[in-house]
Amino acid sequence: MSRLKSIMTRRAVKSSVVVLLLAGGLLALAGGGAAPAAKPLRIYIVTDLEGASGVYQFAQTRETGPLNEKAKEYLMGDIAAVVRGLRAGGATDIVILDGHGSQAFVPHLMEPGATYITGKPRPGPLTGLDGSFAGMVQLGAHAMMGTPDGVLCHTQSSRTENRYWYNGVESGELVQCAAIAGAYGIPTILVTGDEATCRESRQFFGPECVTVAVKRGLSREAAELYPFEETRRALYEGAKRAMAALPRCKPYKLTLPIQAKKEYLVFDDPTKPGRKATKEGTIEDVLKLMSF
Image (cartoon, rainbow, N blue to C red):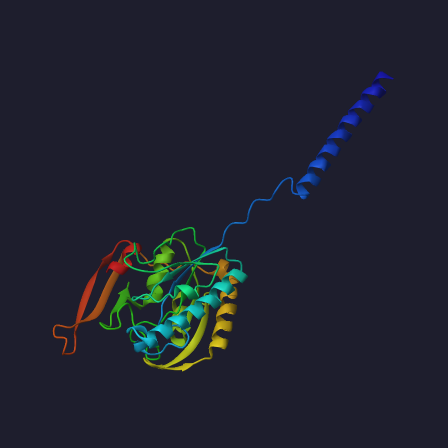
């Protein structure tokens, strides 16, 4: 009898343990054991004005006045579509940098769901960018200097007509921004601009980087424009696709040290054509790329 009682006692203890385990599981399912929070998906957007919907003249981007004010509004509409698309695709935090030289943000047209950086001077070429971001978007971008069908094409300065080579490869602003992001391990996931800009993006970043063309260049200041309703829809859908493509996109990296070359015009006499000058050197730190 004592042996039977001992067996029954052990079985009762086991049953109690099972009940406790089941109860704990039910509590976890009911929210007693909360699952770890999903990792934030931070996206950094660098904007320019030349590649926005409806922009095709330097008068819209260089000079102050009605044309410039309208062009800024066009850019803000493109930004709004991309922000909505990124958030629909799962972005949790979006930071947008005003990358146009004379600054182009219109505060009262800022789309909710993002923060906006504008004004100068500010620290670094891509202020606020760090390794916490999952991807970069280049919005309203343009092709490098010398692209025949590139609307408002230039690299850094359209007036001095700068051209840059890194390790023997001519590169524009797309590469400059992507290389800095690449130093933090951040891939470029979306590029928007004209057809030539999208072609340049595929050349350097491959097919996984999503591109959205909002116009087609005929010359440097002539373009086939697309209706805003169509471009904003395409930008929204492209941003959603970019979020889905993020895991397949790779950071763009330049091999160090970078053998750099720059060609540009020097105007000794403002009334006469500029003369071409050349600068060559080595860049040891990608984060100092824009200082060359």
